Length: 307
Ligand code: SF4
Image 1 (tube, rainbow, N blue to C red):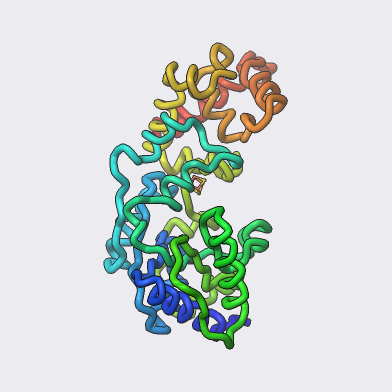
Image 2: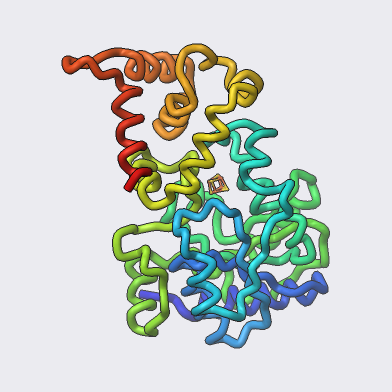
């Protein structure tokens, strides 16, 4: 059963915390189903917040900004500076991976256009992954002892629906997840019962997010190639650049081309040397019909992009 009292209590404490920190409360609005439900509750309980959409420019749903402008016009769209766009950063940092999520850090956690908001509410849910579940409904960013102390204090405060918030103003960024305990079914129940508008992309997708996220499965990335031809072309352009390969991906130079590197990336084959070697073998080996794995992958991409 949905514990609305807990959601209300968490939202009200988040607002109190933003007052203690003397800053506006930021509602991180992605335009996905979870942030739409979060916004619904924030409005229901009359929370004082500013909703911001952080435009990473790599959204899987190419119509996301238009969707937000049409249906949630009060949400502010925050565009990155040109030199901080995903592709410019990728040239500098190389490919992201599940161990090196520089894009999350640069595009989301330390976006310089959102630093004025130190208290954030987000539509993160525990059910999404074991790691998230373990982290709990509040995060404090920073490695200092002070941040660790604030985290312990806030964790205890948010676990208890009775207590008032007791915290001093601090310097560390705090993220609070008011709908942390909701399941996916409960999210959809609320969307249906409250007639909330969600993107059409949910008709054939369970989740929306960044295209070609290092956490995305190969099958999902194949779908993304179809849904996001322009983003796919941008990925291929950078990965085919010899300088990028020589400085950021020396292990593949001379063994495959940019499309092959893209295949290695979306199959998560770059995570270990063994996996890279085995995927390279597949890419370069001919099948019974004389086609290499790389040629088959190139055919798939060319077919999709020419449609
Ligand atoms: S692609 Fe994945 S890791 Fe990168 S910003 Fe998006 S969610 Fe984070």
